[in-house]
Image 1 (cartoon, rainbow, N blue to C red):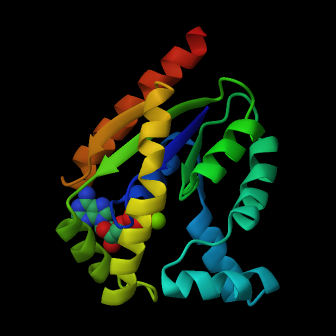
Image 2: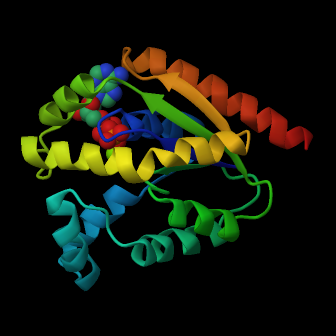
Length: 189
Ligand code: ADP
Ligand code: MG
């Protein structure tokens, strides 16, 4: 089953996915981490991607779809994949739908927190692209381009919202319950 993690930068998607994947043998696929590895390795892809990332812009859809599609194809039916950082655009969401076996997208988990909370967390994280100006730009790109996916998955009956402005363990407990519940439904299908 594919679980999509939706929510603004800094809301805690990576933190939650890493915890859940470690505890349950689920697969955490973070496109941001993959890109940062490419940048660190100095690959051609990394060099191109870094231009977008350092400005707080999205890496082009073709690149991102190419990166994820191969990994979707290699999934086994019993795998639980936590998709973190993808899709971020409607084009990506449609490409994911086309690449996924029918019924395999079981859940879109939407993490929410106020902008002031997000900004504080991102400044605390202190990644290279977590400077004040770049953060503001990433949040506005998120609102314009990624936020519409909330309606997209809600229309498909896949959306579940989690209040992420709480301690990590409390968010994790809701996260796990929601994934288990969705897994139960796919098993019955
Ligand atoms: P995302 O992957 O959604 O951008 P991260 O998981 O990288 O977000 O989290 C951003 C920052 O916020 C990290 O420094 C992380 O330690 C912190 N953080 C994540 N979840 C919480 C939480 N529930 N409470 C407080 N801080 C958190
Ligand atoms: Mg992240």
